[in-house]
Length: 264
Image (cartoon, rainbow, N blue to C red; front, side):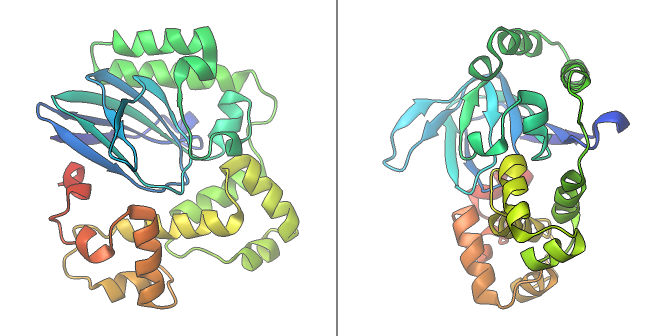
Protein backbone atom coordinates (compact mmCIF):
# COMPACT_ATOMS: atom_id res chain seq x y z
CA UNK A 1 0.00 0.00 0.00
CA UNK A 2 1.25 3.46 -0.93
CA UNK A 3 0.17 6.59 0.93
CA UNK A 4 1.54 10.05 0.33
CA UNK A 5 0.57 13.67 0.86
CA UNK A 6 1.15 16.82 -1.17
CA UNK A 7 0.98 20.35 0.31
CA UNK A 8 -1.29 22.93 -1.35
CA UNK A 9 0.00 26.05 -3.04
CA UNK A 10 0.74 29.04 -0.80
CA UNK A 11 -2.45 30.78 -1.98
CA UNK A 12 -4.63 27.92 -0.76
CA UNK A 13 -2.88 26.79 2.43
CA UNK A 14 -5.52 28.59 4.51
CA UNK A 15 -8.26 26.43 2.99
CA UNK A 16 -6.64 23.09 2.13
CA UNK A 17 -4.57 21.20 4.70
CA UNK A 18 -3.13 18.78 2.17
CA UNK A 19 -3.83 16.52 -0.78
CA UNK A 20 -3.43 12.78 -0.26
CA UNK A 21 -3.19 9.67 -2.38
CA UNK A 22 -3.78 6.08 -1.30
CA UNK A 23 -3.22 3.14 -3.66
CA UNK A 24 -3.00 -0.61 -3.35
CA UNK A 25 -3.18 -3.68 -5.58
CA UNK A 26 -4.87 -5.69 -2.83
CA UNK A 27 -8.21 -5.81 -1.00
CA UNK A 28 -8.46 -3.43 1.92
CA UNK A 29 -10.68 -2.51 4.86
CA UNK A 30 -10.57 1.12 5.97
CA UNK A 31 -11.65 2.31 9.43
CA UNK A 32 -12.67 5.98 9.49
CA UNK A 33 -12.40 8.07 12.65
CA UNK A 34 -14.04 11.24 13.95
CA UNK A 35 -12.54 14.35 12.37
CA UNK A 36 -13.30 18.08 12.49
CA UNK A 37 -11.91 18.48 8.96
CA UNK A 38 -13.97 17.46 5.93
CA UNK A 39 -12.46 16.05 2.77
CA UNK A 40 -13.27 15.68 -0.88
CA UNK A 41 -12.62 12.10 -2.03
CA UNK A 42 -12.32 10.71 -5.55
CA UNK A 43 -12.07 6.97 -6.23
CA UNK A 44 -10.33 6.92 -9.60
CA UNK A 45 -9.78 3.17 -9.43
CA UNK A 46 -12.26 0.80 -7.79
CA UNK A 47 -15.17 1.61 -5.49
CA UNK A 48 -15.50 0.91 -1.76
CA UNK A 49 -18.56 -0.46 0.00
CA UNK A 50 -19.64 1.05 3.30
CA UNK A 51 -20.33 -1.39 6.14
CA UNK A 52 -23.16 -0.32 8.44
CA UNK A 53 -23.61 -1.27 12.10
CA UNK A 54 -25.56 -4.40 11.12
CA UNK A 55 -22.72 -5.55 8.85
CA UNK A 56 -24.56 -4.87 5.59
CA UNK A 57 -22.64 -3.56 2.57
CA UNK A 58 -23.73 -0.77 0.25
CA UNK A 59 -21.70 1.02 -2.43
CA UNK A 60 -20.06 4.25 -1.37
CA UNK A 61 -19.92 7.20 -3.76
CA UNK A 62 -17.26 7.39 -6.46
CA UNK A 63 -16.67 11.06 -5.72
CA UNK A 64 -18.02 13.26 -2.96
CA UNK A 65 -17.43 14.96 0.34
CA UNK A 66 -17.01 13.37 3.73
CA UNK A 67 -18.36 16.01 6.09
CA UNK A 68 -16.97 16.73 9.57
CA UNK A 69 -17.86 13.80 11.77
CA UNK A 70 -17.93 12.67 15.38
CA UNK A 71 -18.56 9.06 14.31
CA UNK A 72 -16.51 6.09 13.19
CA UNK A 73 -17.05 4.27 9.90
CA UNK A 74 -15.92 1.18 8.02
CA UNK A 75 -15.35 0.65 4.29
CA UNK A 76 -14.17 -2.37 2.33
CA UNK A 77 -13.00 -3.15 -1.19
CA UNK A 78 -12.23 -6.63 -2.55
CA UNK A 79 -9.67 -5.57 -5.15
CA UNK A 80 -6.96 -3.02 -5.81
CA UNK A 81 -7.88 0.67 -5.69
CA UNK A 82 -6.73 4.26 -6.13
CA UNK A 83 -8.00 7.24 -4.11
CA UNK A 84 -7.36 10.97 -4.25
CA UNK A 85 -8.33 13.12 -1.27
CA UNK A 86 -8.49 16.84 -0.57
CA UNK A 87 -8.19 17.42 3.18
CA UNK A 88 -9.93 20.73 3.92
CA UNK A 89 -10.09 23.09 6.85
CA UNK A 90 -13.60 23.15 8.40
CA UNK A 91 -14.45 26.70 7.28
CA UNK A 92 -13.80 25.79 3.64
CA UNK A 93 -17.22 24.14 3.37
CA UNK A 94 -19.29 27.35 3.62
CA UNK A 95 -16.87 29.16 1.33
CA UNK A 96 -16.88 26.54 -1.43
CA UNK A 97 -20.38 25.17 -1.24
CA UNK A 98 -22.43 28.07 0.10
CA UNK A 99 -23.90 26.17 3.04
CA UNK A 100 -23.17 26.04 6.78
CA UNK A 101 -20.90 23.21 7.85
CA UNK A 102 -23.58 21.75 10.13
CA UNK A 103 -25.59 20.69 7.05
CA UNK A 104 -22.82 18.24 6.21
CA UNK A 105 -21.97 16.99 9.71
CA UNK A 106 -21.82 13.18 9.70
CA UNK A 107 -22.85 13.18 6.04
CA UNK A 108 -21.27 11.64 2.94
CA UNK A 109 -22.62 13.44 -0.11
CA UNK A 110 -21.93 12.54 -3.78
CA UNK A 111 -20.35 15.44 -5.58
CA UNK A 112 -23.03 15.65 -8.27
CA UNK A 113 -25.70 16.16 -5.59
CA UNK A 114 -23.60 18.86 -3.98
CA UNK A 115 -22.53 20.75 -7.10
CA UNK A 116 -24.94 19.48 -9.80
CA UNK A 117 -23.44 19.67 -13.30
CA UNK A 118 -20.27 21.31 -12.01
CA UNK A 119 -19.71 18.35 -9.71
CA UNK A 120 -20.14 15.87 -12.54
CA UNK A 121 -17.66 17.79 -14.67
CA UNK A 122 -15.15 17.92 -11.82
CA UNK A 123 -15.47 14.18 -11.25
CA UNK A 124 -14.95 13.50 -14.96
CA UNK A 125 -11.80 15.63 -15.05
CA UNK A 126 -10.31 13.84 -12.04
CA UNK A 127 -11.18 10.38 -13.38
CA UNK A 128 -9.64 11.16 -16.77
CA UNK A 129 -6.44 12.60 -15.29
CA UNK A 130 -3.22 10.74 -16.03
CA UNK A 131 -1.11 11.93 -13.08
CA UNK A 132 -1.32 12.98 -9.44
CA UNK A 133 0.02 16.41 -10.36
CA UNK A 134 -2.79 16.88 -12.84
CA UNK A 135 -5.40 15.99 -10.22
CA UNK A 136 -3.95 18.47 -7.77
CA UNK A 137 -3.95 21.19 -10.42
CA UNK A 138 -7.60 20.57 -11.29
CA UNK A 139 -8.69 20.92 -7.66
CA UNK A 140 -6.55 23.99 -7.04
CA UNK A 141 -8.12 25.70 -10.08
CA UNK A 142 -11.59 24.70 -8.89
CA UNK A 143 -11.04 26.07 -5.38
CA UNK A 144 -9.53 29.33 -6.61
CA UNK A 145 -12.42 29.90 -9.01
CA UNK A 146 -14.98 29.27 -6.25
CA UNK A 147 -13.21 31.58 -3.79
CA UNK A 148 -12.99 34.34 -6.40
CA UNK A 149 -16.79 34.48 -6.59
CA UNK A 150 -17.37 35.30 -2.91
CA UNK A 151 -16.74 38.54 -1.04
CA UNK A 152 -15.54 37.29 2.35
CA UNK A 153 -12.81 34.66 2.39
CA UNK A 154 -11.23 35.58 5.74
CA UNK A 155 -12.85 35.94 9.14
CA UNK A 156 -11.21 35.94 12.61
CA UNK A 157 -12.87 32.61 13.44
CA UNK A 158 -10.88 30.92 10.65
CA UNK A 159 -7.56 31.62 12.36
CA UNK A 160 -9.05 30.43 15.64
CA UNK A 161 -10.00 27.09 14.10
CA UNK A 162 -6.59 26.62 12.50
CA UNK A 163 -4.89 27.49 15.79
CA UNK A 164 -6.89 24.83 17.63
CA UNK A 165 -6.18 22.23 14.95
CA UNK A 166 -2.44 22.83 14.94
CA UNK A 167 -1.82 23.56 18.62
CA UNK A 168 -0.24 20.93 20.81
CA UNK A 169 -2.73 21.73 23.57
CA UNK A 170 -6.33 22.70 22.94
CA UNK A 171 -7.88 25.63 24.86
CA UNK A 172 -11.08 25.59 26.87
CA UNK A 173 -14.25 27.25 25.56
CA UNK A 174 -13.95 29.85 28.32
CA UNK A 175 -10.37 30.61 27.32
CA UNK A 176 -11.39 30.99 23.67
CA UNK A 177 -14.12 33.42 24.67
CA UNK A 178 -11.67 35.49 26.70
CA UNK A 179 -8.89 35.42 24.11
CA UNK A 180 -11.12 36.58 21.27
CA UNK A 181 -13.39 38.91 23.22
CA UNK A 182 -16.60 37.19 22.14
CA UNK A 183 -19.32 35.61 24.23
CA UNK A 184 -19.67 31.87 24.49
CA UNK A 185 -23.05 32.19 22.73
CA UNK A 186 -21.35 33.89 19.78
CA UNK A 187 -18.76 31.13 19.70
CA UNK A 188 -21.55 28.54 19.59
CA UNK A 189 -23.09 30.20 16.52
CA UNK A 190 -19.79 30.62 14.71
CA UNK A 191 -18.62 27.09 15.40
CA UNK A 192 -21.94 25.65 14.27
CA UNK A 193 -21.77 27.54 10.98
CA UNK A 194 -18.11 26.99 10.19
CA UNK A 195 -17.38 23.60 11.77
CA UNK A 196 -20.67 21.79 12.25
CA UNK A 197 -19.90 21.26 15.95
CA UNK A 198 -20.22 23.05 19.25
CA UNK A 199 -16.93 24.57 20.47
CA UNK A 200 -16.66 21.89 23.16
CA UNK A 201 -17.13 18.99 20.72
CA UNK A 202 -14.77 20.57 18.19
CA UNK A 203 -12.06 20.94 20.84
CA UNK A 204 -12.53 17.35 22.03
CA UNK A 205 -12.16 15.90 18.52
CA UNK A 206 -9.20 18.17 17.72
CA UNK A 207 -7.48 17.07 20.93
CA UNK A 208 -8.06 13.42 20.01
CA UNK A 209 -6.38 14.09 16.66
CA UNK A 210 -3.41 15.58 18.44
CA UNK A 211 -2.89 12.23 20.15
CA UNK A 212 -2.67 10.20 16.93
CA UNK A 213 0.27 12.30 15.69
CA UNK A 214 2.34 10.32 18.19
CA UNK A 215 1.74 7.08 16.31
CA UNK A 216 5.02 5.31 15.65
CA UNK A 217 6.88 6.97 18.52
CA UNK A 218 7.48 3.83 20.55
CA UNK A 219 9.42 5.55 23.32
CA UNK A 220 6.25 7.29 24.58
CA UNK A 221 3.86 5.72 27.06
CA UNK A 222 0.10 6.25 26.75
CA UNK A 223 0.19 8.29 29.93
CA UNK A 224 2.83 10.55 28.35
CA UNK A 225 0.64 11.08 25.26
CA UNK A 226 -2.41 11.88 27.39
CA UNK A 227 -0.46 14.41 29.45
CA UNK A 228 1.20 15.98 26.40
CA UNK A 229 -2.20 16.58 24.77
CA UNK A 230 -3.83 18.10 27.84
CA UNK A 231 -6.00 15.28 29.16
CA UNK A 232 -6.72 15.55 32.87
CA UNK A 233 -6.24 11.83 33.39
CA UNK A 234 -5.67 8.66 31.41
CA UNK A 235 -9.24 7.42 31.81
CA UNK A 236 -10.54 10.56 30.09
CA UNK A 237 -8.02 9.97 27.29
CA UNK A 238 -9.10 6.34 26.85
CA UNK A 239 -12.78 7.28 26.85
CA UNK A 240 -12.39 9.89 24.10
CA UNK A 241 -10.12 7.63 22.07
CA UNK A 242 -12.62 4.77 22.15
CA UNK A 243 -15.43 7.10 21.14
CA UNK A 244 -13.64 8.81 18.25
CA UNK A 245 -11.46 5.94 16.94
CA UNK A 246 -13.66 2.95 17.69
CA UNK A 247 -10.79 1.17 19.47
CA UNK A 248 -8.68 1.88 22.54
CA UNK A 249 -5.35 3.73 22.39
CA UNK A 250 -3.37 0.65 23.48
CA UNK A 251 -4.55 -1.27 20.42
CA UNK A 252 -4.17 1.71 18.09
CA UNK A 253 -0.61 2.53 19.11
CA UNK A 254 0.46 -1.13 19.12
CA UNK A 255 1.16 -0.97 15.38
CA UNK A 256 -0.78 -4.22 14.94
CA UNK A 257 -4.28 -2.80 14.46
CA UNK A 258 -6.02 -2.97 11.05
CA UNK A 259 -7.06 0.63 11.75
CA UNK A 260 -3.50 1.81 11.11
CA UNK A 261 -2.65 -0.34 8.08
CA UNK A 262 -2.66 2.66 5.76
CA UNK A 263 0.01 4.34 7.92
CA UNK A 264 2.43 1.42 8.13
